[in-house]
Image: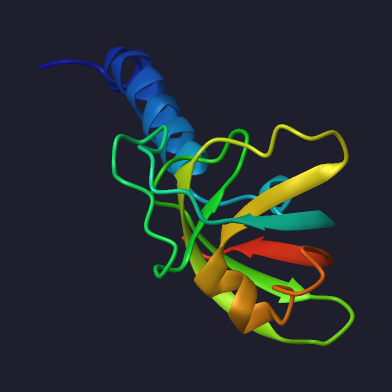
Length: 123
């Protein structure tokens, strides 16, 4: 029969790995942010491989995983929308998100083109 000490030596790294995996899969507060967002309405392929559809509620972010859902709120109007990250960007300094035209419409920023927003990772 194995001693408790030998079982603990084997179980500790496995437990630590599981804790690390669970922590890395969960959204963190560091993934939330505020800054300028712009919108785009191309029909080209996105970085995730799907075709950009301006009528869908999607967004581009520099580093969040594809499929991540974000709640984006226009700081001026208080309007909010949930989008799915499916592309990389924005590539203009000072911007934190590019959203689809549909998402921009929900946020009330189509005419201005740019808005100050905050976003929160939902999943």
